[in-house]
Image (cartoon, rainbow, N blue to C red):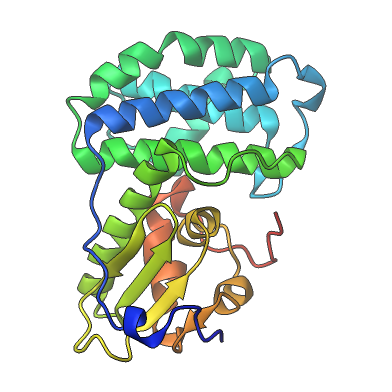
Length: 260
């Protein structure tokens, strides 16, 4: 386990409580990710059948169909079974036969309607959309070996605000050890409430690694190898049983390492 890179004085200060982004930032972050995905895969029909390692059962086409299908379901308010296997499979069934460019066209035509609908949604659900969409952007980038932006934009701010807010709730409800998470975009966030600030678990990582670790894209071995200050053993259930439950049909951390 790592020892952390902060000096003792800074390390002793508690982090700030996580916060969800305002809906205006959520809408802007969602548009930002759509624009990046569109630029990444438009006009690349030859890559449609390429497998996506982060989503082993999916291809590039499946992943884009899911993103367009989520937009359709939001606009039509088809959200009763949100994130269930059947909900996602229905998206692939109705859209999986379209070309990548056709899927991007359909998705792009719904952006305004999606962002208008977000204004009526619970704040956490709206932020979750950006988290899910950004996660799949990087799933696609991993499949194409084209990393792109991994930090410092509004989409990361919204997504990390969501995962840290959910992490804080799950850690508290599960009675798990508190975590002080530090990334460039969120600064220091306090997840859970430690009995004392001294000796609490601390993790300082990149925005991208936080997105992937908290989003079910890192194996147990990879999670354990993060530069923890303290022993994370008792916190790992947050990553293996709690946090990933809100993403991609309850995907758990992969058995094999996902190297990106």
